[in-house]
Amino acid sequence: MLTPEQLHAYIEAGLPCDRLEVRGDGHHFEALIVSPEFAGLNRVRQHQRVYQALGDRMRAEIHALSMQTFSPEEWQKQNPN
Image (tube, rainbow, N blue to C red; front, side, top):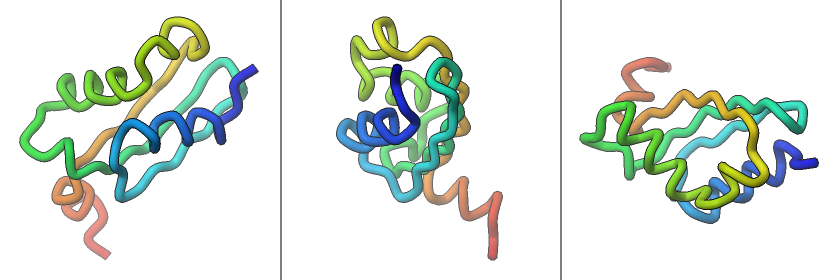
């Protein structure tokens, strides 16, 4: 069974992240991802970039992944402090 720590490592290996938080129970996961690669991309493109970083793991190991994705600028606007 996949752990949140393993999923964190998979995302981090394929995508530069300023902030990355992953929670889950081995089947369903939630991730907060802040990456400079998301700058200028809409949410669909941001999520596609995460799927690209995860590759075949999305089909084989990860059954459900809910994501909140932000560029650093978007994150700063959401969390000004």
